[in-house]
Image 1 (cartoon, rainbow, N blue to C red):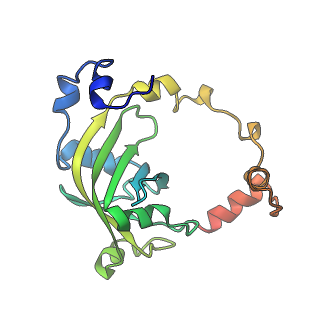
Image 2: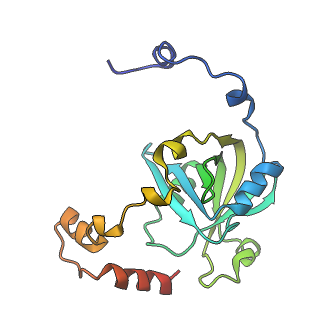
Length: 201
């Protein structure tokens, strides 16, 4: 049957207890700050007024997300495809969820909170040394902060070298998009695409 309410869900699952409840904080303390400082990759989730949810990858050098205080962090909006799905959602609803990852570490850090999109010159100035400085930043006020256990990464073996799949196991991206859309875009090679991306980071 389809589960329609929280009560039905709790008939299936036990109540959370102990550390899984106690670990949630409302601000960034020393361990969560250090985790973000070491993280070169995170997933940013947002939702718009229609209720549709978007999740997008964000990456940079370790510590590319700047911590201003225990209640404030900045995510540079690095050069991308200009769809602006996440930024539009943030403007509409002002909420985000994030998962920070560190290569080789199976635990992750989850941060949920309020957010605004800003082009404040002082904030953009913090990222002025980047090759392609951002045009905007996502200014986040953390409301829920907690470390997430290693089980998902242990199951997936994401960081294990022997679990990696050769890129040759998939068609080149241009071909997949052409097939998906019925289009006939130029099917540049994987190598050419990587070179183009690297020149545009």
